[in-house]
Length: 113
Length: 113
Image 1: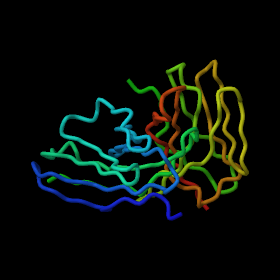
Image 2: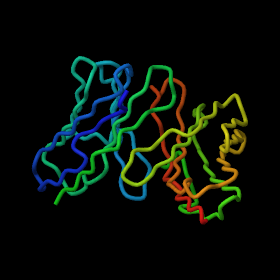
Image 3: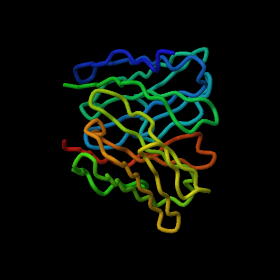
Image 4: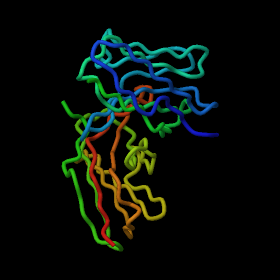
């Protein structure tokens, strides 16, 4: 068990470009979550998967954002046509159904210039 | 509309003394509460939790108290150690919320040697 892995750790991109982040959860965890954290704020929920099904999406997740979890294993979060307001730490977490505590990854810090 | 609030952005405590971190919530549907600790450049780490059917939960130096009538919870750390210096987030979830967590804005704890 190597914990939740996120790649890359840092990403700098120009406004208007597309970016994709990857999350590898703990292997036996069937729930996977994406959160976003901006400076001085707590993490904000974006979306979550139970196995491969995306069960809920926040209204924060605009049409430019899309998340997938093919085969219920790793997940990707893509942001199209990035804007400066997308600059944040993107956190992935996983858990077992029925277990209230998540295990978070170290996050991907996105900077849009 | 912040449903979970941590009104103290920072707290400074002397080593060996008690640290008390506070959290207020507004949503009466919340029935499970958690505290996370976050070091720089790392994801949040689960610390301790409490169900709404309890008013106290203890784990070593950490105790969480829940006052449902006041919609208030607190985290006590006794005795505080320099290694406890971190940002602490309280979080809440509700029944059938898919384990989605709503986080407060965090309190930075500094424990001085």
